[in-house]
Image (cartoon, rainbow over all chains, first blue to last red):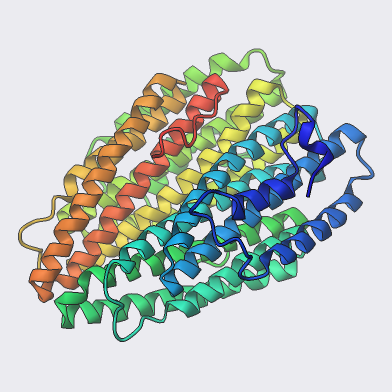
Length: 278
Length: 278
């Protein structure tokens, strides 16, 4: 996976290599050498496809701006992949009581943090060039989406920390149905990123609607855990971890919804925030 | 407090009037007619002073841009005042078991939500005019700060909701030391907004350092509540409310720190995010 960009001084290494590094090559705490979910293939395809899709939009810009905006898009995609992976690892660690995945998710969060700064720096640089209204909207949304993704990384870190705490204790009986909320939220996040890549506002709107189910599940876990704590003081610590974990998933759902709102704004120049609040 | 702007079609009413309305005039649930804390005076001074301070910066722009940026600043100040007030009301409702304040805080949150949209809309408009690098940084930061303030409003809503729940039950004994974390966080928020208004990066840096104490206090409340739940199942529900409340304050502290980071970036063009994470 060598890249001609490796020796260019002013640009980072090939994004794909960098990303694969961050996922699989980071010391002892990395997820196992073999890709457990076949994610490598999925993302190779995802990134290539996304790049092709975006390149169609760039022909109208002069080459310098096109390069910069293309670069920004790639950074955002890289950030998105990292954030999604980070959550996936946290979920895996939680479900399989796998310590290495939890540690790896925490480590990956710092990659996301750095990318957030890089995205903002480049976005500001592009804005000084004075781009057209459509690209301006893209750049502004890039800064917002990057903030959301950075916070997704933070939530994944919270999940991992609590997952590590839970591993120190006996599994809770009866089992907490954390997998359902985890699945929906991961789906929402994936869909939000896809809606962004392929500019699909209708898809984005569907994501926002899903947020209600997530809220409902979070509330039901909160209630179940409260009951569990009232009836057995021996499970207080573990139940509190699950309450935090569930809330963390609920927040990732919020971030996915926020990204979806940005996508609608990006595609339709329409601000739909706070329309769905009660 | 009539304003000559009241009849201008394209601009909102006088900000001060609008703000005073949002604070004191909103139906039955508003905070009492008399200003309990003398906040009215404080903010009259705050807004006038801030406006004078910012006006000095505008002479170099042509009048149209200057107007727009001035307008953006005022909107952000209005939003900041609302956010701070919202938290103040939530704290008051919590400490004094005052239902009206809690309801008023929740209501005020929607004013903040609307302002967030207005700030973004105007910011995008200004960016299409193509401003200089310094103003560009201001506009970009305005969008970020407005997001932080919107989330402060959300946290104040959470605080109010939990405060209302707590009012339904007997006070917890021994009392939870929620006032200390509340005070520090409100101070941080005020200081962050002052640092922004007066462009004081050193002040901003001090705020970021305070965040550690807030984290420490939040952890200690979490521990105390856990112990309380283990030893007495009768206090589980109330302890959970306090855990959420304390976490909510901790998040407001995070938002204040984020604003402080934006202020450093605004003044020094230096991105200090993630430098203080461990």
